[in-house]
Image (cartoon, rainbow, N blue to C red; front, side, top):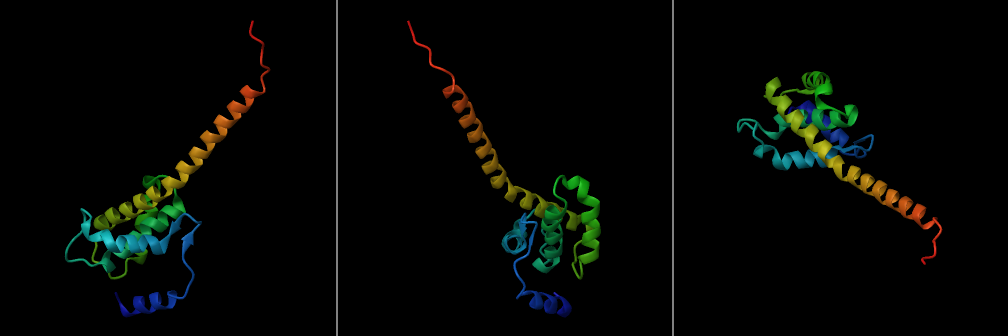
Length: 142
């Protein structure tokens, strides 16, 4: 990491946690990638986390910014990588693999929230159906 980048990150240390629209916790994502990047299929042993960090950042922040389909955002993500890559040794192709991995991880992190919402909708639907049945008059049996 360059001295300028280190100064920048030290200045940011006192800033509040970065969450983009509540969809991504950048600090948690960065911590996750620091602990697993060397196990990824695209990992090169001559690269450090400092080489991968900007690509991961583009991926998870890009997911929060653009959402939806990765393919629709890919050109913008590539442009973001080229703008912020700094001293990274990654080629564009290598960076795009890391960006995609970070995008997918951020998207996967959103699934439990969606499942809870779906579960709530199902429960509400079952309650409504039960309530409708209970409002029907009971008929005497002969």
